[in-house]
Amino acid sequence: MSKIRENIERILGEIPDYVKLEIAAKTRDAEEVREAVEAGARFIGENYIKDVKKVYPSLGKIARWHFIGTPDTQKHDLLKNKYLEIFDMIETVDSENIAFDINEKCKKLGKVMDILIEVNSGREPQKSGVMPENTIELIRKIACLENVKIRGLMTMGPRFGNPEDSRPYFKETKRIFDEIKNLDIPGVEMKYLSMGMSNSYKIAISEGANIIRLGSVIFGPRKS
Image (cartoon, rainbow, N blue to C red):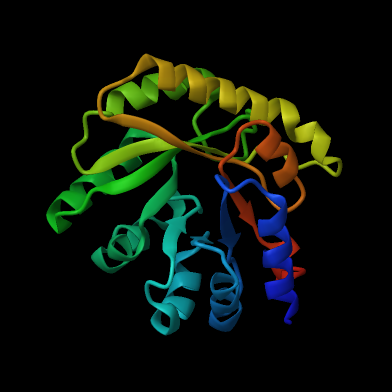
């Protein structure tokens, strides 16, 4: 059994059935991604369009493709029809502008794009994401868009050596998630909470995550 398959099977055996395993496929080649999907991963998360260009032609729709990078810095490519057609979800919407742009492009395609709102739970100025206190306002402003569908929240949170230090940020994002869910805003379905990476996914699950984004714990150290 390969190491990738062994790691996937071990993780799937550890996590609850309701938690979706998303592979963070940044820098990984098509065969590595294929192996992870065949072992049981159902979501492929890509940070960069340049990586999609390399692997998608060999893989096609073998799983659900999620964009987990920063939309503003890659907007030119992300909003091309061929990439909007590939992605099933964009997890990193953090502004009215990007939501409106996705909506307009998807309207022309006749597609409704699932999105998550990225929350900057650590309030880190160098990172993308809407500030926690502005999340509900943003959702109210874009909930009326017909060709995007808000399906939940995503957060990165600060990265720590001790994963337990991530808990307050996951807890805060879950609180916002529940608050929005209870508001029952028309057009919003709070279904997914995407939190936790290779060093912190167990903490994230304990705080309510139902999508975890794992890379190095599956594939080993990231390629340059």
